[in-house]
Length: 154
Image (cartoon, rainbow, N blue to C red; front, side, top):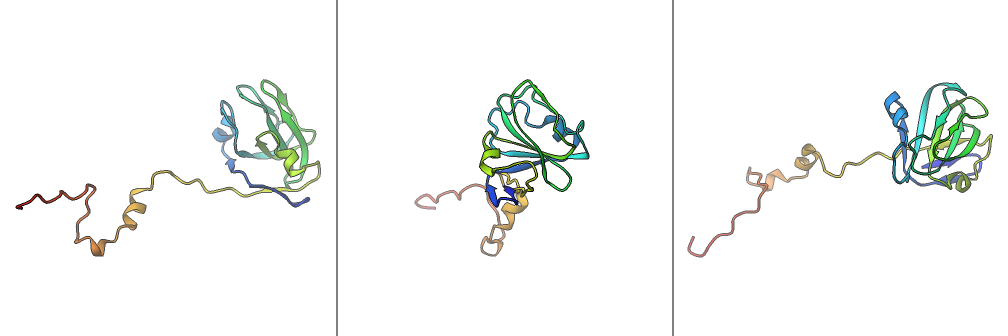
């Protein structure tokens, strides 16, 4: 979720972090439907490091540039195939679906924070699955198949 602490507004969508070179490099390029926010954590607070390009983007996005105290230094509606440089140096960049800036009522000087939702895998790991089995009532055996039905006369 994204939180405008200055105005008390909360956007409850998913938030992911881009804190490595490769995650920042990939960003949202070629994402067919941007339905989450991506927070870029930059190595330093400068205008040049905080510049973004919209090459290979399939749709427009809202972009919030924050300084090291997480105050908004610039806001953009970024369109595909363009290049953007913030008005001031930024340490964090938040790329969001279109409309999030308006929803948060974000303005320059507002303090923005975020909470990252833990990613859950669709398939439990074997350790998680085994920890849910009641070994005491399984007669010491674990079967992945249903028991063979008994035929008459057996």
